[in-house]
Image 1 (cartoon, rainbow, N blue to C red):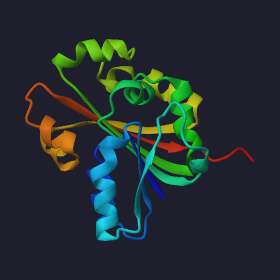
Image 2 (cartoon, helix red, strand yellow; image 1 turned 60 degrees about the horizontal axis):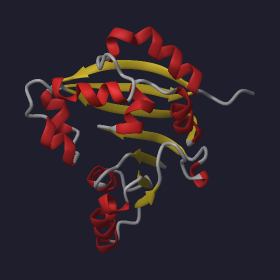
Image 3 (tube, rainbow, N blue to C red; image 1 turned 90 degrees about the vertical axis):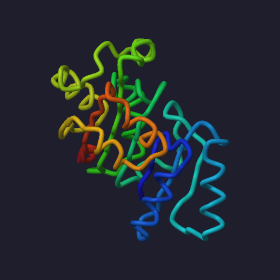
Image 4 (cartoon, rainbow, N blue to C red; image 1 turned 135 degrees about the vertical axis):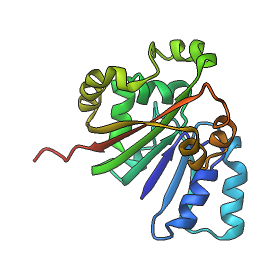
Length: 189
């Protein structure tokens, strides 16, 4: 099972479900109206491997505990951005709680000069994770993940992400984007 946190309009989940029919994709977002069209589309197409769930990183549904072999976070904002990019360890640990041991966590986030106020609001003084890699590794470890890498994404990579927001953002020449890859640590045994 794969979970897309902050799924927004759910278009990423619909595409992922179509390309990986053996995987159940769950799109989770705190705004039900954002997911309504994709949820209806999944029903209309009889897409049996895409569902949409109301929820937020602060209180993930207990039914998802230790279920996901993959978690994606595409272009987060607000508390979800704070969870994965600042990061706020307690929120990041919530994400770890839905992961199976060894699950892949893939995050793509983006920022430009216009986003300075929002970045400051979520506690992110420096958007570029490469400049604070040592601290990120420690915070991710405290939350239950092994940070595997941080890479910069160019505008083509952002466009290829295929989300509705990515389609809007990739043309901005000031926009920077990064991919963070991490793995949920195996359970202590």
